[in-house]
Length: 476
Ligand SMILES: Cc1cc2nc3c(=O)[nH]c(=O)nc-3n(C[C@H](O)[C@H](O)[C@H](O)COP(=O)(O)O)c2cc1C
Image 1 (spheres, protein in one colour):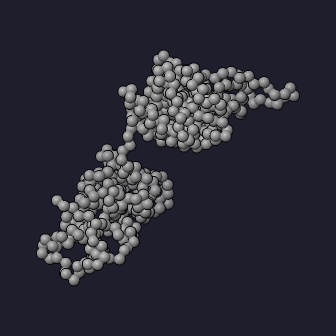
Image 2: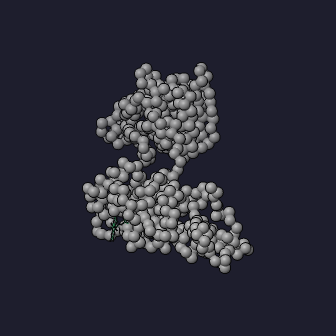
Image 3: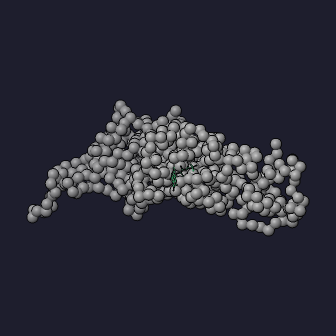
């Protein structure tokens, strides 16, 4: 059957359709359907109301909406009857900012909190409220609302709507759409903490999760309608919009799915006495970025980090340590792994005569500090007979003879790859956000050097993970 693109119609016809649909409170698409139906039933629109042949004046893009835009994702937003319904209006704006078309459905109870007019003005679309609306139901409009979108968002998802969903009710427009849906559904529950904790709601939430329904929130906080606090506040509009975008995004490739990746990051602190330590300027940013990139590539990531001021990357198991010896123990305990990446700037030495009490100034002068070598984590793991990860990658932070030193290191330590970077103070790499690296890889007896341009640490991480994914794929 032929399809009709309203945007491609003659301007005069579009102008006529816009006027007619606005007058009848329908979307332009629906108006066309009504006209066709009238035509088939033999009661076409009077000739006097037919479109003028001349082109219509240009209108603002906001008025020119003609149903979902081509190539733009669309959301059917069901607004439930809770006090948080006002936040759904902000959600419309947040979704539209992200170039997502929004069509709103308001439950009868929702209309006690916000008006269809507000939702319509913000979404630039007709708003739907009634299951038995002859204007949209002559062709089963509730099915179209359930299917002609990429995602259904329910915000606020009331206790009542969730109960209906969990039990398959379809006695109003919102519940009928939810039952007819073949698109992902995201709920943003919002209710009094007692309602949220009620055994019936708990059962319904569990059932909905089992049914594959996505949920965001509720958050903990104060309730708008009472002096109560607890879990039940609807997530903020920006959080819901971000969750919607996540669901709408095409699934990312996960080339490291099923692989265990072990990463070290940050400096180590080697105690001089209970209050002083030897450290270095490593920020941990590069190792954390690699952990996040490996996790995004589907790997099961363990990150053993020295003391840094960074937040745990989501989905990564983070183990915080202080000294080189702690780091080695935790790395050994985290084996086996398929890939190990040693990005930490581990102190080469520690103080042999660590003071049990704070060292004091004495007339005799400075207390002598004796240094002993720390365990070499990269060499220890590279030379393991048992449990050596199949791919071991070290980092070489150098201030001179970068490539020569890195080549020597790859041979001395027994690792497979080295990421070499110049950490001279003038580069700003230590603690900074950018990095210029060279990837050294063993190729039989040769070592190949691949020099990358200056990049952010996230870009270096993404590039390194892509190389690892390729190597893993070639090996399998
Ligand atoms: C002032 C007021 C605030 C309400 N807030 C909520 C709420 O935040 N969450 C909720 O689940 N129900 C809330 N309710 C109860 C719902 O409005 C009621 O259960 C209604 O039937 C829900 O209808 P719906 O699920 O079709 O939107 C509130 C009721 C009133 C009167």
